Image (cartoon, rainbow, N blue to C red; front, side, top):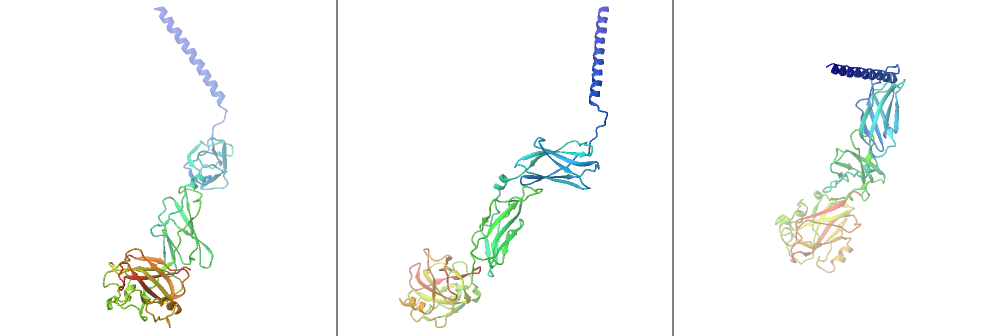
Length: 408
């Protein structure tokens, strides 16, 4: 029993000795680390905002209320690089831009310092994206409305139509040439789908280049790598049919009845009509036969003609369009089916603007360009030479539309 007590006492003495040694070591460690000065921390950064840029990045945060702070230091690239932001005067917000970066995702550590070199606890900014050539290569110019890319008014105003942008679009710079030959630049805002030019010069290129930001806090604007060319603008608009009038020259076709006279040709119909809502000749003579009308004013740049046939039969598939500015002494004496009629028409001042040949049944609207460089024209003469169904006397036409270029 005594042996057990001695053993317990021995173990107790060993434990006391070990505890005393450890306590002495702790005291020595404290002395090694304690310098006799109190550790001071300056006010730490909070709620920093990342502002992406083009091979640069912006950082901003609310200024600390600690009046001792004299500067901030931002470390990045595993603290291999840094940027100092000195404080001068009182500011509500601290801002800086770090330049010369690669297109990459960075982490930043920000400390505040006072004049004695005391610093704050670190503030970490992670996943800070820097943009550059790779991002720019993905940018596309805003798309135009492929179904209805533009509209041209009778007064020569051109309206370009675009689709809605699908990213953070800032604007689209549009460049064109005006009628004075000057280069003009306008900006289409992202919340607008169209833009109008009152002075566009026909036949010249319109280019456009869109700009973007990668997010709402970005400090730089990025542009699509190249400008695109807008589809060619056709400045042809319908001539004003409210001015059209009937003209009856010798040997012109007569209507089938008073309700099918040639004024039906400009009543605004847009699809093939049936009898009696169209021009229907009386069929008194064999083709070719002519009809004439007055457009009400002189047009100097006629460009196109559109013809719509009847919804069944006797539709022209081969006809000529002639024009002249003044019909004084311009009436032909020969019948339109006379072999000498063409030469006589030319001698009277008429100009052949186009021979139109269709390969269908002649019903649907058919638009075609007139020959280049037409003269000034006020009066139009249609000479029907052949019908699609082979019938050789009657002529049925729902509508004739003439087009004039208002941009050149």
